[in-house]
Image 1 (spheres, rainbow, N blue to C red):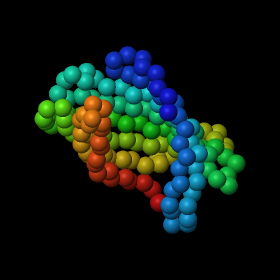
Image 2 (spheres, rainbow, N blue to C red; image 1 turned 120 degrees about the vertical axis):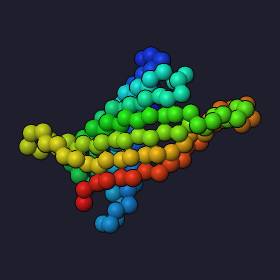
Image 3 (cartoon, rainbow, N blue to C red; image 1 turned 135 degrees about the horizontal axis):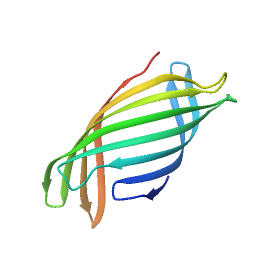
Image 4 (spheres, rainbow, N blue to C red; image 1 turned 30 degrees about the vertical axis):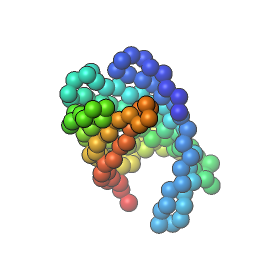
Length: 143
């Protein structure tokens, strides 16, 4: 993944992902290109609003069709506590995924909706910055 800093509050990214997804019908293999822009309000404040817009080009094994998906995430991060070099931050995000099909013109469909609640732990280990993230994600997707 490559990123470019536009300002103190925003970045643009481009990347590639290889996915193997276990389904009821077996493993689905996917290659995915993506571009995204992230935004955050002032990180020095105790509450930070965050957002991300992501466009994915998805290529599935045994398919000649490319599918696209647009993802829009909004959320909030908030300081929980800090002990010495360790800072713990909570976050809540929600993200809407919309699929796009180009077979007969542009057709859009709801793909999934995610709500994520978790914590970030930022600390120093042997002089290096280390970040741990843990959370609970609820995914609503059509069958």
